[in-house]
Length: 360
Image (cartoon, rainbow, N blue to C red):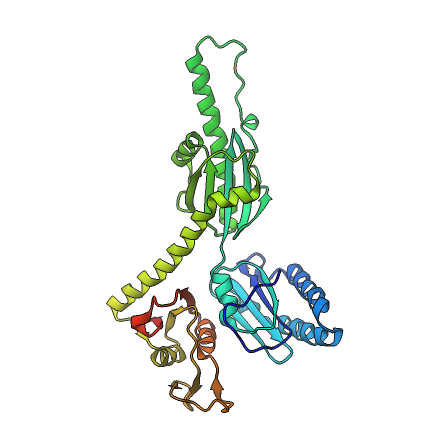
């Protein structure tokens, strides 16, 4: 499935954009080369469905060449690769990303980052009738996964009860002990997984099970929502509909956190706003977090000193005029280890639609 561009961009067909998660820990300073090769092959196959072999191989060969130049010592948490027949770029990203392949006519960094930032990965733990399943979620896609040493049901940890139990309260107590033992094993397996991947967790279950789990979990800081209900016979679509409000809350929380960070930076006087001042600060490598309205576009011409912008009435035929300097600004901030946050139109009106939290 191809992603639709958020912003209208110059048409450069075909173009390929890859977003690749990277991790210095495993293996050290490397990417998953096998996975990247598979992505490149997939891109080639999809291009051949719409374009000639000649056009396809121009892009694919450039993509392979660019991948061969990856500086593994610069790898952080993600990598963005952009290739078309006319240009190519590679940006090392300082934030976690989900794998993504986009084949489109547009070629804009902002489009790809907006899509990445507006998408969420998570783990979903469902506990129903003393059974448990874990799903890896990405937006509305859910794929069941197995966690090492996680019991699938309470029978795997159940204590044997005598055939005759005279005291029913004792039997009830044993059931509670079995449930807690079952849930603790689940939580231990979840802890191992969360040491491997840094991702939020959503937990679904009936009220009683959730109540027990809340008391014993060691992963409360990672759990962003508890959704009560029985989903034993629910389809994946029905399950996602139940947790969708929690996903939307995550997006809203990210948006509000960015605005809160801006307010804190204003109090510390560590910020600038307006495209000209933001550009200068970014060019001076001061950018910590760029916050921009998602649909803010600004044509401009970069001054000879590379620190100033001319956004006054410009000659449209001047080849030095950038049709959207915001895209170049995003790249500049990322290049100097800054981060990007998008907010809705109008939320930065008093800051001329763009603001930069600076390092000092």
